[in-house]
Amino acid sequence: MWRAAVVVMVVEVAVAVTRPHIVLIVADDLGWNDVGFHGMSHIPTPNLDALAASGRPLQRYYVAPVCTPSRAALMTGKYPIHTGMQHSVIYGMEPRGLPLSEKILPQYLKELGYKTHLVGKWHLGHFKREYLPLNRGFDSHLGFWTGKIDMYDHTNMEHDTWGHDFRRGFSNAYDLFGRYVTDVYTDEAIKVIEAHNASCPLFLMVAHSAVHSGNPNQPIRAPDDTVDSFRNISDPRRQRFAGVLAKLDESVGRVTAALQRRGLLRRALVVFTTDNGGVPQGFNDNAGSNYPLRGTKNTLWEGGVRGAAFVWSPLIESRSRLAMQKMHIVDWLPTMLSFAGGNVSALADIDGVDQWAALAQDGPAARHSLLHNIDDDYGNAAITVDDWKLLNGTTYNGTWDGWYGPAGRERPYNVSLVYDSEAARAAAALGLMPAQEHYLEMRDAATLTCKSDLPPIKCQPSSAPCLFNIKEDPCELRNLADEQPAAAGRLLAALRRARASALAPNNAADDPRGDPRLWGRVYTNFGDYGSSGGSIK
Image (cartoon, rainbow, N blue to C red):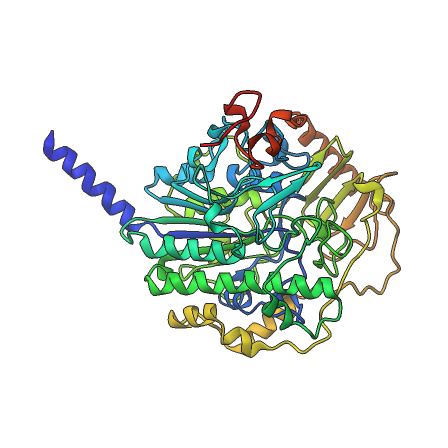
């Protein structure tokens, strides 16, 4: 019996040693055109571009239109309609969260022996402790619980109230007040990497605040010297946005370099993704760009749901080429489990599909259709099947149904910055950086344009469903619903089938107990306490 136990322990340790590391980096509200590897040139993103160049940029990758639904999809492998998370976001005083019946990504990975760490944003429910990261599979968490914070004072202002929201585990991290939050996340991620026992597999999720806007009094904040380095950008809001983005890019480089120093990078998967589309000037006090795509965050146009992302690993055979396979954020859970050597066939009732073979070997697409969302509270829905996309209904009464810049392509692209970046040096140390000419060809292929020899055909989705050939017309200029009634009918039928499986949204009214004024101006797990507020432990 004793010998058998020893054998089992040895086998478990051996399995743990062979499992690769996984680093998941999530940007907040990053637009399609906010990265250099998609054609933007006036804000350098050299570290992101270097990993895209030596990895696989995801050209046909989709996310949910807004934060909480997207993060729920990422964590569960399920469309938000199947978890009740499809409508809007969780607010600081809202007594709800991602249902506890859902098993999520870090819980699966812990079963495979992974050490799991979350740095940054949670936004999947905090009104009771059981909904928080340390009770949902993460070994550690430094960051915040609600939807946004100021980059320096770490407070969140929403619904006519405000409070501090920054935690180390369950405890308030007041000692970090005044530190720029992107630097805080980066330092914590590096600390986790440096302290990690390399004989165990690591899962590190870095969920950035950048490039989300903060509080209304000063919504876009970055260090003055970083902002000043973008004096070539005449628009002051876009200039400050450039500072926020530059610090995000710097963070990616520093984390990649730390992985290389510790010898973890050679057996690692690095995934970079936005949570939803970008936020252009005038929307949410921000200044991002989805150019040339249509729409914004919280719409179902391509600008709201087509995500900037790449996957990087020395274990990818088909590196340095665009991934043209259709992919959705729900696919990360089965794909990461497959990469980790888990039993993907045991996953039940999820919408995600294992894309590892398609990404690593440039194999055939693992999916041909995807649901963008069904939100009956907004009255909108969208689905893509093969090359066709159907959109029915809109948000904001159509106010944000247009095309928004800036293009940011008026300056020459400085490719030398990419190859001099920390991420490029780390990749080059493993022999993975392609020739500059090859990367520039990739970048050209990834740069979308909206030119068409045919005239636009208007679309008014609040009046009638719109149909687009999204492969030929990614900018959604030509509504072909009248020309292709059979295709429109097929997609409408697919939407009806999806709606039949949808759960009701689990949104809840604000609970007065959650007002941070009752808790010393702190957002807290108010559902675990009495009704009158008090001190937080």
